[in-house]
Image (cartoon, rainbow, N blue to C red; front, side, top):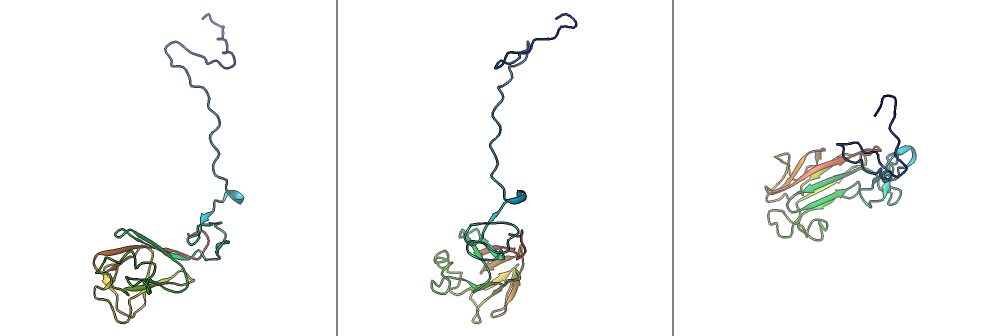
Length: 181
């Protein structure tokens, strides 16, 4: 090409190809839009209890009226995930009337007592575990230390709660302030 000459622009719909270069791909449509965010770009999180969307500024779920405060217990074997908030304690054990949320999961685990432990969550975000006054045959352990029967013992975020020697839960606490859960 002589000096001072400029190459012609390709016609609409064509692509400019240069010798030795691969053809350029056609431009694609704009990327798919992201999920709509709430006011000022804030994305809601699901409620721990009913899964309805809850804005970070809200202290309570607009659908079920539960607070953000709750505890999450995750057990690998048996595969079990429990979420529990303020109110009556969560009973953990094999007795179907006393511990209805865990009895089926632990039915074949004879190392878990019928009435093994209770977990309560306070509105301030604190959580407590307690073994019944009568105790358990295999014990309840918090971070490797056996807890005393009938004594409320504080549970913190990241703790390991064990029922006997084989069943363990990872503990996650979510506090009352907006944006923590």
